[in-house]
Amino acid sequence: MSLSIRNQIPGTVTSVTTGEVMATVRTRLDGGQHITAAITLEAVKELGIAEGSAVRAMVKSTEVSLATGPVAGLSIRNQIAGTVTDIATGGAMATIKISIDGGELTAAITKDAVSDLDLAAGTPVVALIKSTEVSLATV
Image (cartoon, rainbow, N blue to C red; front, side, top):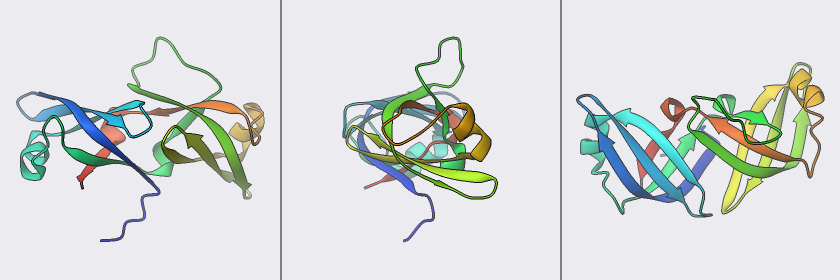
């Protein structure tokens, strides 16, 4: 199956915390950073996700926000450090490629945000991703 989701990062599940309907799944990405996904308990069962499972964490580029450093006092669980490698700008939007340990992320943000954050190739950034926007696929 082919998907249009650009961000597909391999990793290994380190913990699954279940509730009545939802679960949080913490995954160690191949580069050593962690990402948390909030998915349905039904999906955990159907995919057979358990500690040690090999998965791909998937995030649409439109769901990746950027900051120029770690952000405190924020409910967003996933803050992944990286470095801007490429910027492609259009009339209103921009696509930012970010090198992270073990892979690459793409963020789609406004052209104004690129300017306001003074982003350029080589700029260190932190990708901010809500756990509810992370999907998992078993490998």
